[in-house]
Length: 489
Image 1 (tube, rainbow, N blue to C red):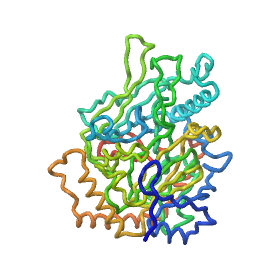
Image 2: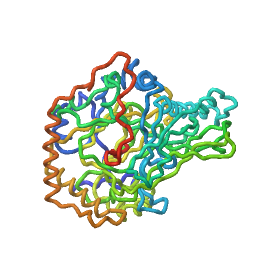
Image 3: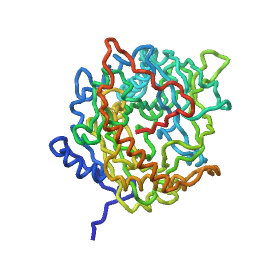
Image 4: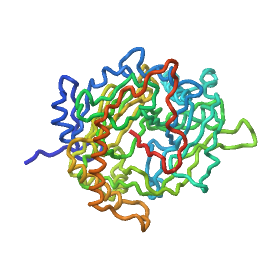
């Protein structure tokens, strides 16, 4: 008889800790292929990025001013996800009384220096509050001046837009940095679009453990200033500073990727929960919902000094996102999770979920199709003063080479459950998943992706150019058909 599995004290579901191993002493390529990649089992790896300058080099680490050197110019722009109200960067509207809605993050084009400045202002406010209890701007004039600095920003479409969308909100707008500090920002940036000097600060991890994966499919850099903060009252006042909210973490929904994932943490901390594939549906995930997106919006006044930025929502005609999402939040009370999971979480979870905590320097292997939920804390929120203002991580994805039959079944199961869990009526021309068509598509895509992975992809992916200061802009406003849906990790 198998031993009983312990219930997690906070989540009230069976759980097991994700194995933690040191590279290379405890985790050899042979062991990784045999026990983890070959079995689709997650693990946390210590030491895998000890040779990354972005993490370990005193001169080139990303905790300090390294980004300013290559991304801090006035013409360097970043496209950043944001949420003005919720610490979940993407969530369904159950709390708001409309479960048919999926609230998507806004997307803001912002100067790179301003993105960094918002995080550093939060860092300074944290430091002052720890010593003085509150921030009196009369005693911190330089902080006040930094908060009042003006900047130009622009909303970008994260969802499909058309002539009926509020297009006036997508024009460039002027605001003050203090208007941006309360926003929860989450940067998801293509690592291959970085300046080559920054690419040299890291490298794809799999070559050390499983070179048979070949070249990575894709890679992202993740950087966040943390959850939303409280806006001071009155919002336009220059005499008060934004304040931290009650929650110091930012959360992702449960979601899954079809590729193998090495996720390496450079700064901050992450709590992770993984639900293995092929189990009973306890997450009630779907991608079919009314899609709403946050926009930054000006609040006008007859008095010029009383103008400030707030936020609004627009509803897209798009009703399907490209990744299934779940409203289950493992750290929320059981009665809330029962409501959003049709009574499945936590009561019907009859298998152990996998839990772990990532510290700086750790790498999490997330096998393909494992549902994962992530809670991220920034160094300032943790009281850490010498590791920068942002939580920073980098992940690379590879196409799987193991367990094709199981993964094809997991993929089809996800398609069926997404259809069954739709939060809105589906149009008559949207047919339920067909097993034969899905299997053919799965194996064709697998074959083509393996051919691509077999091609050598140089790293860094382009030659360093003297005086190079910015990455090519791969985030220009795109037509709706080309919009990319990025999931928060």
